[in-house]
Length: 188
Ligand SMILES: Cc1ncc(C[n+]2csc(CCOP(=O)(O)OP(=O)(O)O)c2C)c(N)n1
Ligand SMILES: [Mg+2]
Image (cartoon, rainbow, N blue to C red; front, side, top):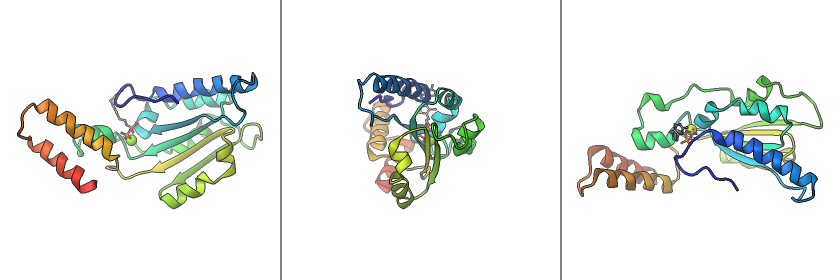
């Protein structure tokens, strides 16, 4: 597993995923990796927008990949750190699932199938996860998972709170810190 550590450089994972998938295909061909091996990427919408042209490289190199694109309308981690209402944390809503077509993916090529789906509920996601083509991981597979703007794991919310408290340096909270604490409690 390759993990982009929290709040380090975003967006390189699309390129890293391309390299990992090419390496995995070579290892499968050499018998060094089980043939059932798959390359699966979880990518934020904001991160995707910084290096979307990697999809072009994936298609050009016929990379077998499964991408889960987490669409929460922008930079949610930044919202938690710098404020929910900051305008610069929103990104232009793209038609993410059109990206393979824009970058010239083959239509109806059995050697390189393209699978795209959109999930807005758990039920839709569960159904997509049952799909045989997605599970096989062959070709270009992309699932756009739509989330609420403020949806984030409690571990992230608590981390942000802890860092904010440490940065303030005193026992008294600032108003934005207290706002954040209320928000964490409200959404826990
Ligand atoms: C190269 C780079 N630019 C900017 C940042 C600052 N930054 C950290 S997280 C983030 C937003 C990530 O948005 P997204 O991928 O949509 O993830 P989300 O938090 O919404 O799940 C930004 C801009 C960074 N870490 N690295
Ligand atoms: Mg996002």
